[in-house]
Image (cartoon, rainbow, N blue to C red; front, side):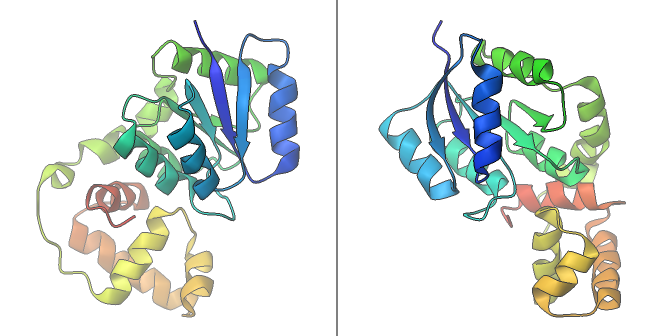
Length: 210
């Protein structure tokens, strides 16, 4: 069975380390990309058997890249590979159809096992990962086509929340105070009828806000 892998990561050390970790396996790294545009261009020319995709990249958010890949190649396995143990990222990855999520701090064996599951057409999510986001994905409000009256600023804050940014990062990104961001987040959760940021992120994904 073919095991052609595309690595998408903007850190050269990470790409080299991944190649080294896979050198003694039957997985063939057929390409590398450092940003979203390069990854999409590669897939259009030659579809690999799986993609190992970083999340925080200078050339664009990896989860947005996942969504774009899945539009044209819904059956192409994409494994998220991140240094961030962020439940919002995990929730978005599940909602967007990723085959799994592996932390860069995980043992090499975990990465290889997850990739082999992807190549076999199976999911590599662990029970713990799915348990963390099951509540968010199952919230009744998530399955209802309801228009929520968010202000423009609340929509901007929600997009940044769904991208996994903290309140401090959102404040810096939007040029507003930390306390103002906290207030917007509280309003957003109340309007959406959800209890945490992960649920809000899932709602944003399903409404195509990110």
